[in-house]
Length: 321
Length: 113
Ligand SMILES: Nc1ncnc2c1ncn2[C@@H]1O[C@H](COP(=O)(O)OP(=O)(O)OP(=O)(O)O)[C@@H](O)[C@H]1O
Ligand SMILES: [Mg+2]
Image (cartoon, rainbow over all chains, first blue to last red; front, side, top):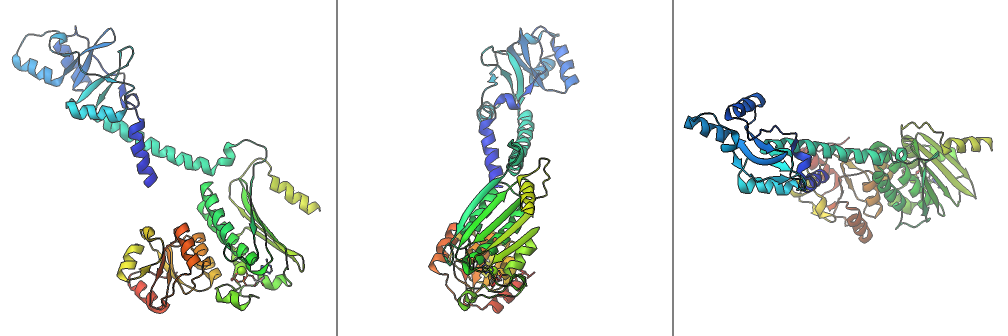
């Protein structure tokens, strides 16, 4: 919401008269008669026109001039005698903020818009047009904002390569409680910036945190490697041991071998791995006692990708091994 | 209900991130087991706990919680405070126990899952 408001403010300072004005304004010539002017006003339902000769604005004629003319009961005459000659004009390259100030200061309801160099008429600006124009530009600008977010979430579509993936790696230090959770916390922020869908971020955040905490609490440290690709986000976390004796048991909800000091801190419910499983589309836990544990988590984004991904090739490779 | 209103009504003391009380509290969740919170608390919930070490901040961030209330007058550890300020996580404290606080919250219309 803040971003939107800021965007609207910006817009006032970005937009020029040319962006908002009505181009191709209805005009009259000085040699047309007041009767003709009356007909033109009726026909187009407008309350005034710039008076133009050789593309140059020579006057403004409005409904007020017509009323005065009719009230006086004079014979029909050319517009040139009733118009306001050499009216104030706006230049098309002026910023809207300034144009609006000019409206306020002068009290005029309409301005012809001319090209700064040629002084030729290029459009017209009235208070009504300003309101209408600004509203539609704002709607457009806000849509642009959405498009930006859309783009961020489709960064992979905008970058051309046969295989597109982003690897982010974090070191996890065993038993380092001060830094525990840091990798997952920064990862969540990264994914937000990349515009990944919130539900995917949410699931990855939970899985990543649980995995990171297990590595900190139960292992001698390891490496977390996130892979972000259009079709999936995966996390591989490998530690340097000591490994898990009984994987079956470790996967069971409620089973924990956490030490007392760990339990006191609120860990050891035996819910970490089950949480990971719940959040992941695919989870694979491998451990060799005495060597280390490797956990693979995959979450599919639902973005189908036509090009064959590196991941697919990798899985084929690893199957072949 | 806004977290700021809850703080005022229940006279909770604000330990961290006082500028971030303008959030809507959707639900409440009581647990001292972090993975229970990770698994079951809903986004936007107010988390009631006695845990005061810095990992509660990470949990609140990961789960996008509205804030954390430490009951029984527990004070957050110093590094917890630092992390919470940095991550803009609101930590509150109260002499009430979890049961009493939950009762008052539910009187205010804050429900569990
Ligand atoms: N990387 C690892 N290395 C060695 N042992 C591990 C590792 N990860 C998990 N374990 C073992 O598996 C058990 C179950 O893990 P899980 O995360 O499910 O529960 P927990 O960590 O005990 O409790 P919670 O996650 O609920 O706080 C742990 O208690 C631990 O003994
Ligand atoms: Mg665990």
